Length: 462
Image 1 (cartoon, helix red, strand yellow):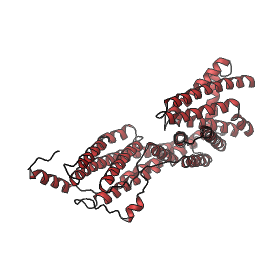
Image 2 (cartoon, rainbow, N blue to C red):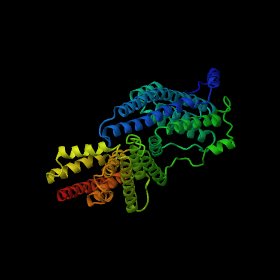
Image 3 (cartoon, rainbow, N blue to C red):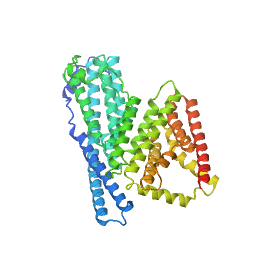
Image 4 (spheres, rainbow, N blue to C red):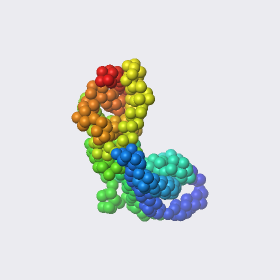
């Protein structure tokens, strides 16, 4: 793209190209619409499935055809709403990718022209922007991905697009203003966003779409508001109040703890009217536990261990209370557990029982060594255990104090301690291989000891 010497047509053509660009703002409506369909679908799904499980496994002497038909109808409405979400997410993915890719191209060419075609600064900024643009999938690819995944990839697409846009904006602010105003978007913030999507039954996606639009439009005002003239470099008060002097995003462990507790409380409240929130809320608990394990960087390893272990216990107790209050919804868990124990023959042979428990717990907990998302299975495992205990107590098969006592048996403490060690290992994957291996090995060893102790306990209690 080097300017040919003596060729005035080059500058004239480039100037005409720059003047043909129109840096228009983005309409937030298409990016907000998917969240509305998703919210409706998730609410109907959790309520309809909860009522269905109550009708076939609750305290009713026989299945009520009318209640079963009503829950089936609600589930059908949920499916139709989810179909609407899929279509809306396909459109939104295409718009977000197309608009961002086109903007980065036009903006990079404009910057190249304003900063001087032959200058090192102009050239490097152009190449940097082209690299960012290449990191984005094409609009058609985004549309196809949203279709093939029924919209499940839409939050990930929004993360990729917003992260790329923020990186592009930061580069241009540095070039034209000499100062960074916009925050970057890191993976930890995305995990928190993903947890919030689940905790709010999808409505948080509306905020993500609005946030992306707001960032995009403010960038148009700040950098391209005077187009086709160069940016003035003057930042007005509205931009200053929108932006921040802090260049990076950060999610504190305290904020994540509050988010986890809020999700647990919501789960308890929704269990009373019979919402089945295992698909919506439970995954968020695991994501938050993983995020907390990453963010905790205190000087005391013991303090981090106690905090993470305490949070795991809070998840179990919270789900136990939810299972107790809504035990009619979770009766199927009790029956499923009974059948599994009978079919497998747990307790008949000491060695077999030990290995069965160890293998089952290892499958649940070993993904925890993966940063950010590894805690998903741990969150599900401990939540399911809490719901099972709560449902057993609610059905009158065990007293409340016996259910609580189960959680402080030696094997329970050892098992949950192993989960904690495996979660804590994830933050060392990219920083210290030695510590990573040490935590993983310790977690697996403690998990094996927990299985042996639990097998002994089962044999003694028979």
